Length: 65
Length: 246
Image (cartoon, rainbow over all chains, first blue to last red):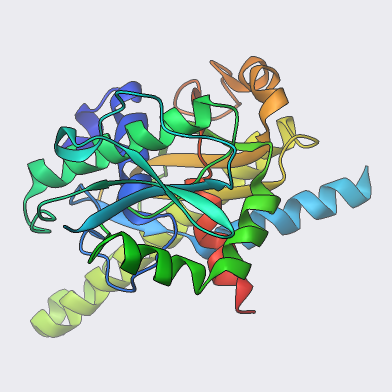
């Protein structure tokens, strides 16, 4: 599947990322989402830990400036 | 008839434009509640999760409706694609049961939009090479474990590199971003990945965001950034949900 990523141009990658967001993110109301599978077969890492890590970095930078 | 919901909008602020069609070309209509409005349509059946083409078509149509709401000047709260309700009554009942959470989200997201910068990343060769002693009698099991360790190390490396890159990008638009989310789509065996960094920013600062980041080539990146948006806050609605229980 690596070849998929290598073959995508930048715009295609951005579109695939958007589609994955639509299918994988947003309010879950019913508790049973039928479509929760990412559209591509690549290893897909949703890095929640990074969100807080990035925010920590930004806070440190903001505090230091 | 099952009701399919695309997004929530502040009460009495934005009605679907006449003629707007959603999934399966069904007309999009307003479902009004005490605390907010939902944009919805009817749906005959949801696609099988294995039906990649139908899933893709559903996601595309779902996003087009959410984008239409965003164009009206409100910030819609996107509902995750693929959820249907027995009917409008069931939909209203379930949404009103969580009205406090959703009102807070609508208020938090008002005037904010999501912008995304994507780029490619390549990490150097794997840090952990398979242990050569395995060739001397470690056997298949040991070799397999070494391969798994090397693969994990590569994934960690990609993740760390993505975080560093995200911090560089976020630093450039520091005063604008209210929140940040990072996604890495990669193939651990190759050390190549696509990285998407989403920022939650004020709607009024979209052009400034583009000017700062579109086409920018940060040092050591594989290529310039591609900037897309504005979008409804897909990445941050989920975060808000998860953190609401903290």
